[in-house]
Length: 559
Image 1 (cartoon, rainbow, N blue to C red):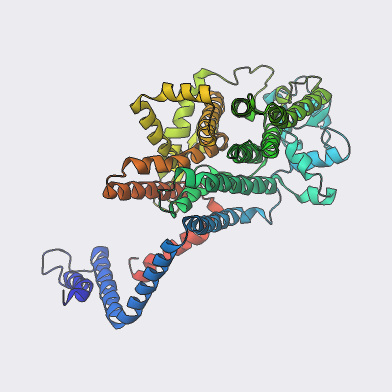
Image 2: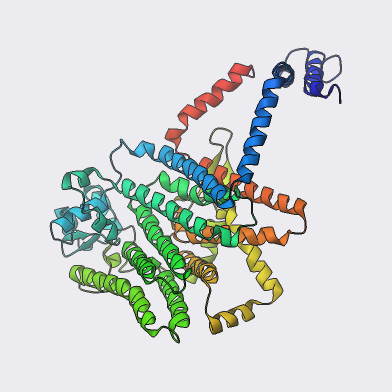
């Protein structure tokens, strides 16, 4: 191929000729220069310029290519664990940049809410109710929980709090406010819930990274190391995260906070069970994290109980015959933090509402009267919620950001299904399909019951069971909202990451299929991040991009 280096230039010259002589070739019946001919001319010019620059600077480009090749070879020669650290670090930088960019509009704006800070101020004053006093007009109503009755005065007090005996309370868990009491009252007045949300979200991502890094070499060592970066980008950016970053209030903070402590508990429990005997102090940390998760959002309780039962089962199988004294110590590490939390929550509720099980939901000043509306959870919502959370598509538009989430009529929430915003979760179907196809599911369960669960099996079953439990709760809930996806998605995405290696092993006899599998996963992640970001970009953030998009066609002569 003596003249192969000129191929691009030749193609460019051909395109230039077609553009100039389009009328003579019968390609254009119009003697003028329309957009098509202009575009053809510009592409031809670009290709010719690329070829000219390539020939003129071929030595420089060759040196760059050699440098890239040598860098790649040196990277491949590095220890696999070090490669994982490098690609993980790069992914953390990218996710951090996206978080900061998305969060910047909130830095200098007045907080949309600072409920957690107000409750922290109340705690510092040794009271359980907010300092804000309910207006007289609200207290004078025959039924203040009736939305239509208080509609005209709804803007005179904080929305969506609980009213009981003439005082305002928060029905959200108290843990975030307890963590905020280290700040002064002056700082708390300006510390909005969006800052709490941001801290919780970043903490959740870091714990997800620690868990992925901790188990990657056990599950996914056959994969190229760069795949850990791809997985972390999927975990950190895809799904509802972009939307929640633009709506960060106490609703989002409560959900992300409970997930932070929940996933943190999973990390410490898995770390504890990787050693023999099981580390008691790590189990205590896991239990503490799960207690904090419950104290942040009570709906996480069923998933926590499931994981606690699995930990108890593991510890019992490991210690009942050979180390009974270790059994008592480890069981105490599991039970004591959760027991203290449950007693504390019971006292907290009783002191406020006279009932250990009342968190304030019945007294919530919402658009529904929860004294009358009792169908909060029902199987009637299953089909509609499944459609919203998984299958609902996005809409397209001719201008940036080109994609928009579609509004849900019942809740006025704009939701795009996970099939479009986080299809990475579909990877979990690969090992599940293999297990069902092999017909060894019952045998695997029987072996686990008889011999106990190894740490890796515990992690897989724990993430699968807890995500299924939390998903079931959300599907049964009457009110669909995009933020509720984050209730079950973190565990599901971690499970998908763990499942990557299983899919790769299926094609171990066929290198082309292995490469196709990696390409498929990368495509899923790129697609999901693109849809997640574009479909939720706030209008206020699009002005600069829209201006650029308008100027580019003008610059190249299409307008």
